[in-house]
Image (tube, rainbow, N blue to C red; front, top):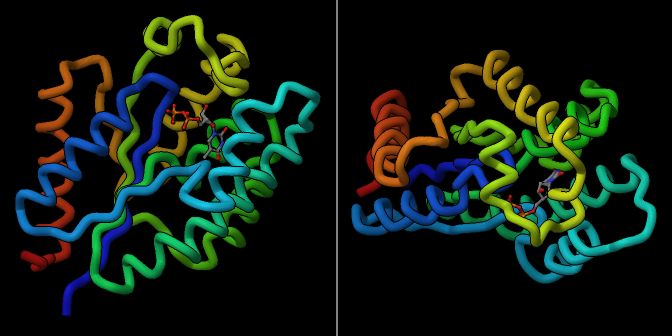
Amino acid sequence: MKKGYFITFEGADGCGKSTQMNLLAQYLLKNGYEVVLTREPGGKGLGEKIREILLNYDGEVSPRCESFLFLADRAQNIDITVNPAINAGKIVLCDRHIDSTVAYQGYGRGLDIEKIVYLNNLAVNGRKPDLTFVYDIDVETSMKRVGTEKDRMESAGKDFHNKVRHGYLELAKQEPDRIKVVDGTNSVEEIHKKTVEIFNLLLDRDNFENR
Ligand code: TYD
């Protein structure tokens, strides 16, 4: 029986994770895997509506409210998209997931990390990524890449984004088997090569045969 996989892509705004996710998807498709792409916030349907609020609402949003909205979207994405695909033996690639909430709402906004982890666990209902890429870039590069058209989260300031970066690196230290940090300042091709290399290590490790 085919084994499904759940792989998540994380990092600062503008770190190149969406590009890398799409390149890995093309690589996997070429190699005969069945792939499902999703993202948080905003998998599909209701998730899209939650995404709109999270990124564009211009009134006051409390950090706790913000967290619950990300978590609500996550629960929906896990139930509607991720779990059915994994149960069908597909490889699910997700643009941002649990570590974004720890990095942005925990480290960035200063909410209690243990509580965020607890709430994340409730939202994912036991599903955990098999592998997570963190594309690491410094805040100056991130800001340059994002440019002047910023959404609500991107407008949060340099200090906030420094804390987010630090959060990701801390998480990677705590879970080195799952979370792999890749230097996001190299060329797209080099980063893709590294991404494929790490993915193949996961396959070797699990003796995964799904071709
Ligand atoms: P998005 O446009 O998807 O940004 P990117 O292309 O950089 O992924 O916007 C998602 C924003 O929401 C991004 O700034 C990170 C933030 N975010 C959180 O703060 N917490 C979360 O749990 C998630 C999933 C995202």
